[in-house]
Image (cartoon, rainbow, N blue to C red; front, side, top):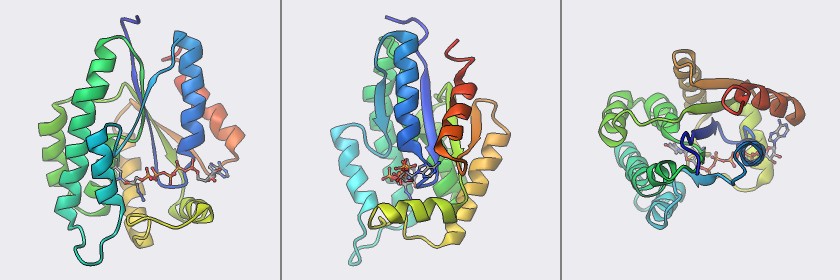
Length: 208
Ligand code: Z5A
């Protein structure tokens, strides 16, 4: 059991390359600790939070989700995941690797939807200063990321937003990263091998 288990999160717009970054970081953590990390995704990661994931991802033209309800659902899912999976895992000495966390709500709902005061209040109430040790933000222009996501198949409800929404979201990711030393920005428009080199370099200190 490791006394100083860490919570590492991978963030980025759709198509930024989170899936392969997660596979890489998982391998690096396994090499460092000798144990697979607990992997989570948001929204989701518990049976209840996965049901909330379906609610926020699937468009219902008869009863479209309003922005405030969307925001509350993300925080309901996050509260369930943090309290029942992430905190217990860390307390038992397991490293946790997250596919998205609170920075996504600050960027998409706070920046993209323009709901920052609501997001900040929910963040304070729900997380009470709990945060990842390190966040790796994979930065990619929305046009590039959405093209990659579209090449994979049909776009979900959030992916169908106008480009301006993703421009605001990206600008918020970058602004928040600029004021928080625990958020590492990686240029994810590079070839994947270069992205992976940069990720390894940014984790050198924490995996030393
Ligand atoms: N959301 C929110 O609004 N608020 C919140 O608080 C939270 C989430 C937690 C979750 O959907 C949605 O919820 C998400 C944000 C919102 N919506 N949007 N839009 P998700 O989990 O289903 O989707 P995602 O997180 O955006 O995952 P994704 O689209 O799968 O992105 P990805 O994991 O980064 O993509 P990928 O599969 O790694 O890469 C996509 C393709 O690009 C793939 O074919 C790769 O081989 C290719 N790729 C990746 N990197 C490269 C490079 N460097 N070069 C060339 N090709 C590449």
